[in-house]
Image (cartoon, rainbow over all chains, first blue to last red; front, side, top):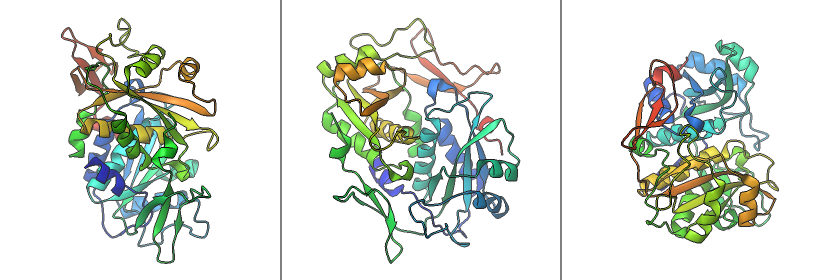
Length: 189
Length: 189
């Protein structure tokens, strides 16, 4: 069951933008993160939610998409995320979130997959400009942005080829291919 | 469903040590991590497995347990983990794993919870000594250790009290209490 959910939980970058996601849904997803592990139980993560087109439009220009697809500037209008969750570190609680935002992101994205949604962890963010656009206090460090929506693309996992290239790529039909290393390559002892 | 799994997936530190976990089970758990997101799809994480008492005994002395329980040195013989997964960064692939090991750990621990197992992410590790004990090449940076077993303790989530203390604690019956911040405290916008 979890295996199926994890396989379904691909990194999606094109969405049915017209399918909205309520802020209540985003709160349910954050609650999954809230109940997940946190280093020394410090819980320094805070969350900034966006579920409406106006706020989404303030966020989108500050994100970079799919580094390996150099001729693709990101999703066009109509295929953009319908919601975002910004994951922040409350520096009054801790200067570093350790790996808490990795744990939290996986909980949120698995929860999204369960709801028929999908998303992408975006680390390439113009943080200062985004902070300014949203009026986020400097107390909060922007760690990364989760883009969310109803996926509008097919993503296929395939084995890494003999030349070892792990770059994802898109074929002529727009299908997104993601090479994954084999289990035997990952286990060293 | 995922909500139930995430609630069940507490950080456990005492186990039915006599209940063994096969290396095949560990491989299934690592496969969940393999299929999870990785920054720029680099997949630098590698895994070192331990599923037998001899290898477990080489690992246990190099771990520190439950920082807030200062009078508890860790699980006694009979209540120790029956397996471990060491998460490593292959520095020939990438100098940093980013938050990949947070994502991977959550996949593995949710998979463990689904199998009726439980575990704990241990970051307080004597890394050099552990590397030497297990003969792990210096190419691999030890990021953290997942301790796994059949849980032998009750862990309860409760709201953080008015004084804001987030330290977990154990009551006279040995029940482990974990204060979690409220959803309203976590969402700042």
